[in-house]
Amino acid sequence: MSEIEDEVTTRLDGNAAAGLLTQVFCAEPSGAVIVCAGCGATAAIGALPAYGLELGAILRCPHCDTAVLRLGAAGATLCLDLRGAVSLRVRIGDSAS
Amino acid sequence: MTLRLESEAWPGHLPGQHVDVRLTAEDGYQAQRSYSIASTPAAGSLALTVEEIAGGEVSPYLSEELRSGDRLELRGPIGGYFTWTEANGGPLLLVAGGSGVAPLMSMLRYRATIGSAIPATLLYSSRAWDEIIYREELERLSADPAVRVIHTLTRSHPDGWDGYTRRVDAAMLEDAAGEPEPGRLAYVCGPTQFVENVASDLVALGYLPTWVKTERFGPTGG
Image (cartoon, rainbow over all chains, first blue to last red):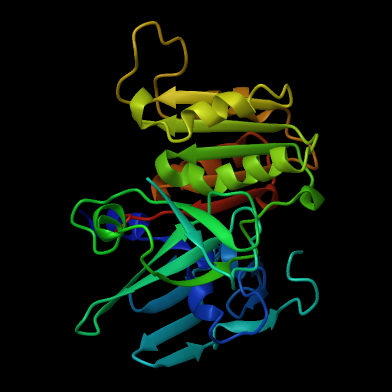
């Protein structure tokens, strides 16, 4: 399998990382809107292309490919790196909407 | 196969949400996979559809070793993005590849349970007739004139089959999708490449990207 094919078949959605993220955020994370520090695009976390789910997650901007959110899982520790994001907007009201 | 789970602590879910199932071996080794919830939202119980992946770490255990009464470690319900309730509106276009039908089934079951009049079309790609998950239930659900179920069988089909026999493509989506107009919502779930092809075809047909929600299964590491 070529690197490009491999990248396509291992790409998931940010939605798949929501389980890990619920251990960091008390608000529902996949509907949270993140603003990319690279190009200013906005997207729901659940809609972002996600990679590396075996070890945590890297969520990329669908427009400029900036890694907007990195989550590293090691044993009992989670490490969240948000330097690729300008802001993160979460709903704290009704989690159903 | 379908796993029916009960938990007093289960709060119910939104159609389209998933759970993480974690298995821990005696030596402490842990493996975790996400499974979509296929059942109608209900407090206290849920059903998962598990496709056994040969050589996988979790699905063979769930398919073959797990016994009625065993306990499982779950995290969830998870996800607020790939979800649909009547408040989100429609008409709905659901596009499934293989076991990607599970979260879409939860939406159809929920829609029927609440007696929603929102039209729904399911375009469902399976390899063969025998591999169509929920086939009989889908027939019953499509007795509702507002529900349309379109199958395509990509590898083999029974004699006399007059449905589609190819992979989902733009022409098939055009048949299923109707006129692209505001309010329409599409939910696409299946293997990564399937989902990306369908999503880009829908956008080419005039669906705005914000009307199309996707859930990729990826390489189904099992």
